[in-house]
Image 1: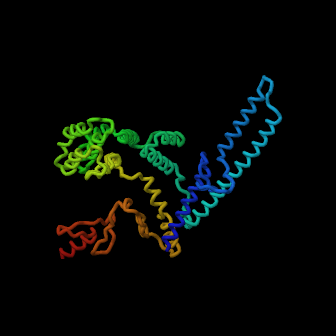
Image 2: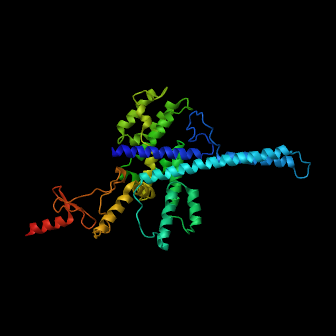
Length: 388
């Protein structure tokens, strides 16, 4: 029942957000008044920008009639009509503003209802110069990594950063290659694979095959090449032999799919080949791994975890501990469990079967010759016991 209430609250919140977007849309295609449906009520007010543009147009038209040096062609009726237009547009702007403010008020109430727990009452953060520099560098790195280069350079100028973050040139190169992949240009990515083949081999990465696979299918299904099948076969002869031993079943399916290429693979036993692995995301993951970085963007991970309830749980636990007049036992652990999505679980938690203690950096898990795993401290105690 509680889950249903949460779903309804979220749906109402999303509907209100859509309505807010509608009333602030410069096109004015939809509003709360009509909600995209026919209504017998008064037509909604036009967008504010449209009202102002109409008013400016009327002013310019009247100014042209009045002229600077030429005899004026404007009449008294023109001025009366302008005054009437000004009043109408003023009312239209006010009406639209009321819709915006009303929607904002409803949005605020829904947010307060959905997120009833207040934000943590922490002290002033990032007040020192070192902390501010670290924060600004983290933001700049996030912008470079996500490909927002213009925004990143503007941010650096406004925050007076002397040097760009580490690896910023590599991120420029990464997005250059990703842009090429989005246009079915696989050559830059394959060149990178050739330069980093040792690294990819050690990781047992399938990136190079995924790129050749995507290139093969792009050639095979090309709508502009009248001899697309032969072009794809020639490409496979050139690049697949070196990959055949490791990817034999996949290559066999690719070559057999040539028989079904016309009029297309849809409806054939090989239709699933079109929905294969995303070569671009795989390339980005391997590229970041080569730089020693994780697949996910750190700032996004922090926001996703913090915004999904982690901060609220930590604050609640902090208050309980404070009321109980106790403190955290260690500085690098949380006193409560924070539920995370699978993609945000980076390390397994090991509980020693002997001491029932959780493994840590100072007390890691150790594997015995028999295959059993115990904590390092427990292993030391077992060793001492055996020596006696």
